[in-house]
Image 1 (cartoon, protein in one colour):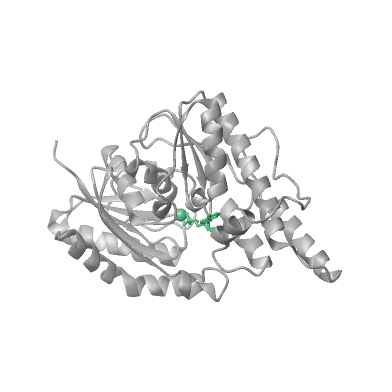
Image 2 (image 1 turned 30 degrees about the horizontal axis):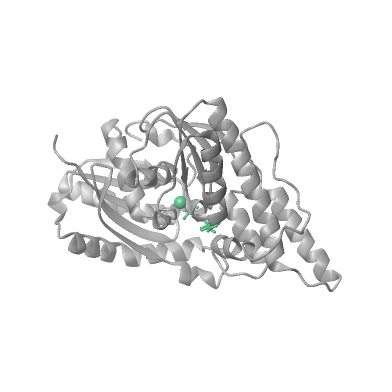
Length: 341
Ligand code: KG4
Ligand code: ZN
């Protein structure tokens, strides 16, 4: 069978990234330009600034990618692009770039749902085995997904309010920590003890999540302590917060695995880089005697490689778009699985 080289483009938030992926499994080359330092002083991503910086980076990233891969655009077979969800201005830059390349080359344009990309980051490490449960934990999503085969997504649970990464970032902000807060809270949590009383987030019988309650509890606690003139034990608060968040993620994932009788489990999204979550899920997988895969840490946060891995399987399912493809800020999982979106 002929090899398929995918040029993949990801620009849904504050990373301009492109990658060339062979047959959905082999990374040829990836370039990531992150805007973290630009947005840091605002304590979060400013959408207008993000889209402007994507415009500045996009052609340079493409040039650098092809040069590093020692390839020309004619060597590419398909063009994969994140069409949503994400920041609309940011998405548009990637989608317009992909459409232009598709127009000029006549190569198929494959729209990829951002979360499908996060899940397929695991395919670059180890070929996905089905059926599986995926736990998606990012700055914008917290989903439990059942996959019976390639590029088939059934969402069985989701967050009712804040995503887990968002909760990490907001807790970090109230504690005066840098952006993005997730990795910093993760680090400080290892140096503290679980001494603060915080609620367990939506500790019920559903597969859904809710993180706004625990986030508000942290915000209130910090305000109350400040008003009383008390110091916050930042490391202890990070430990207490992280223990409860990871506790509920592990508990609900374990139940999803048992009730869907799967032998394979993958973790995806930026929060999959969290060391305590990794440790705890690995322990759970051992106890349940199932296979577990995490993406490499560099492919947990947004990147083009994961989009290239997903695009290959989307293409094999006949998911190809014409040049009317539009970016979508909000798109439920996983309507991008329809053809001609
Ligand atoms: O997947 P991603 O790059 O962007 C979205 O698609 O949303 O995830 C970014 C999120 C941020 O909220 C960031 O704080 C969080 O992932 N994150 C972490 C860690 N590394 C990144 N959260 C907890 N622990 C980490 N080590
Ligand atoms: Zn993401």
